[in-house]
Image (cartoon, rainbow, N blue to C red; front, top):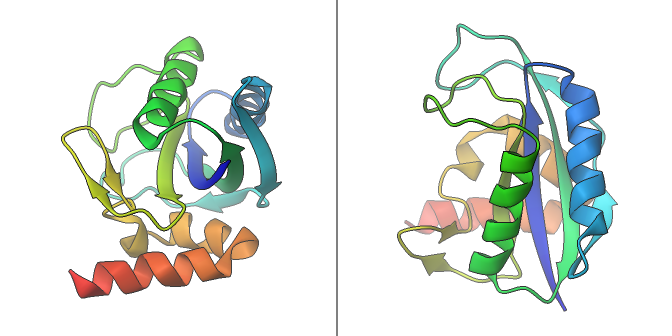
Length: 146
């Protein structure tokens, strides 16, 4: 089993409820188990600032899925929860990103690990630091090396 760290966010509908629903759906997947979760933080929007504040959190999961397969599951959960991708950094019912998968460095058209912008976003690093400070440090170190 591999450990992956995910960032979750929502800012329309019932953000805290949607985060809880996403965590439940992730944990119910036969090949994924949630092993840690941060508290939920309220944060200002990033990138596109004329929208409601976000509820953000991080979770650690244990999985036997490869990173691209894990991404597929997470995208299907977003879709099942009603996520519609209209605009970059726009309002969303749910957003689930893979921040890191073990200590794997990967760059494909569909997935870059660790997440290429995680180190720039306190709404990612603050909750991640709560559950895995060593992973946050590694993500920041990798970003500094590039």
